[in-house]
Length: 496
Image (cartoon, rainbow, N blue to C red; front, side, top):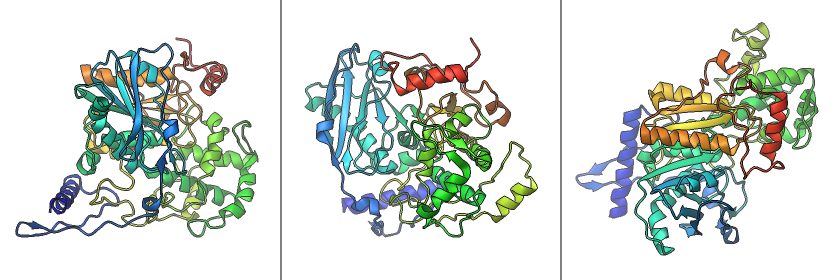
């Protein structure tokens, strides 16, 4: 009886949520019914390929060492409700907890935990932190939100079991990178507070290099592939493109005399320069760092998503991808040329299956939304040259916040990096501290305008919050150190 009532209550909450927010895209939900005081059990939700996959925690990977030179802390690890976890609580704990959401971990069966990049900074400021492996790999943001929340709710119980009784955290915050940035933004959204099984009301959030457009990232991948095929003279006629593996070499050679890899920069052909301009406009418009990013390895990473359907490798049962609203451009002039009009009129438009990512009665959507329905401080950072989770994700999120009337809770910062999540520790710590000062003292931090084309196109855009100062955790041999040293020479900001 209790489970029946819980199911009916959840159905009522989802229905009320839809009534309150006007639905949103791809929203469908059954109506709750009852006879007298007896709730009607909703039908069981459908299963998907992701639900039949088996994952297990790689327990040997859970232990972690103290950070040299950092404040003394208790370190705990283990398995909670099918997820691996790590927790670190400084001896001088300030009573506040930071949840860290890691990025995409691939499609293997082993579940592992990552430490936050700003681990040292958190300990020095007295914060405890906790991180989950999640119960599932793949792009399972639903699992990421639920399992991160579940670990936050279990923090005190785990501490007591480990021999250190603690008061409940006075505040809990969430930060995350890449897919973890999606998790972070979804976790503070009103939709998650209404529909998650494990509910945590975070006091603030810092999504970094986040998929803030949720499924619109996959729209971008499809638009990129369809545009490339059209420019190469091999236009798509159906979706997914089942012979992509066969035609990819011809498409790729049309645009690149040297395809970018981890060690070799890409070199474009004349037609490739047109592709580059098209991708620039798909990923956020004219901006610093784009050319370097396009020649880098994350172009190849983006191409690695081509040829797939819109089911996100079994996260969904139906195709969620749509390219119907994309406008392809080959220059910086918003007015459409005759060539651009013809291109847009003839290109294959991918159509989403209605309700592929609808609200559900058993918890969060399969792909939780980042609706920007927020009422706590959110400070995001994003590199300008990211070709995998592009800067346009920030623009999408800002437009959503503007539409929702929640922009007063959002501050965004552009960083002059050229790879995915290419941040220094200083940049991450600065965003975190800005969010904390805002939440605790009411001081809204400065940010960047991400929507005005002339502002974003400025040669100095991103300089304000880029900090190339390296810390003890970023040796000269590290990728970030090498990247920033090269950028200081090739793309310097004006001396302050």
